[in-house]
Length: 423
Image (cartoon, rainbow, N blue to C red; front, side):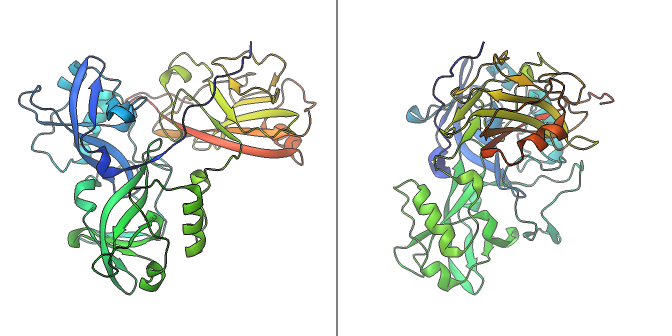
């Protein structure tokens, strides 16, 4: 039966990249080593790997790459990142010694070994923060758009955070300083902001900018160009590295530049939905898919409006080959609940038809590549009078005019390598 879920875990925080250096990674059976660098992909500015110095226990291999997908429940106070791997798995992983920077082919072998999905080649590969469509990057051969050919095993787009955090920063009308750090979302692992020191131009002033405001990156020249003027940066809100960014500060920053505030940065008390089983924007465990036990994941609700009469849920996959695939419809859920336990029987609520033709939840089952799965929560001002076999279109029509508030979270799942099926 439905039970009240314990209070939700802590929300995402922004972590300074330089403070992640030195964190200890702990496997299920012992210490792996310490973080020496961070590799992010230059198309989506998302952290892809911790570069870990092993300290010699691997003898012939001094460095290994560990994806954030393997990290669970970071212990920030003790500077420890627990890893859901064994040391034996790491010992048997493909050797990358002498292969830095890492090629896309080497990445593919590494991710196949650990069972991590490939983050390139999907509709929106890897990150919840794609770079703007107008952004361009300069390579050694030519200037190219920041979208890689689908499925192509092109050279890797991995960049060292240590290296890029020292790049020169150029405004649209002149140089302003140099990068000193990145601020990284510790749930999605996106690089949300670049910290800049303008000392050589404006002594004592530091600022932050979003990767969305980059007009061009000249990798061969170690330079990041911004779509901002020197004058606008001169009067922008100051950044203090000793104090965390607050919702108030970020609101002032976006207002100052006249840029839209990203909805997923909002730290307000708006209604929210998340799952303790996976981080927003990250991989959904196999247990909750049709490749596994096909169980509905546990969900947490926060800040449901007091005036809500019922809650409704919709889970779908917009990346399905034949169009959006509906995985779950549930409605007339008690708004006093703070969530649903795993595989809840939804006592007192009703469920509709999924696109497999069955009532209730059906888990991810992508035919190939990585798909996104959106969990949408609606707070309604009424009960819905619908039949038990209601389908998506009728359900959405019934919501019209009755939604008080809505929220969503997203998980990802990729078909296991070399697995194919018709659906």
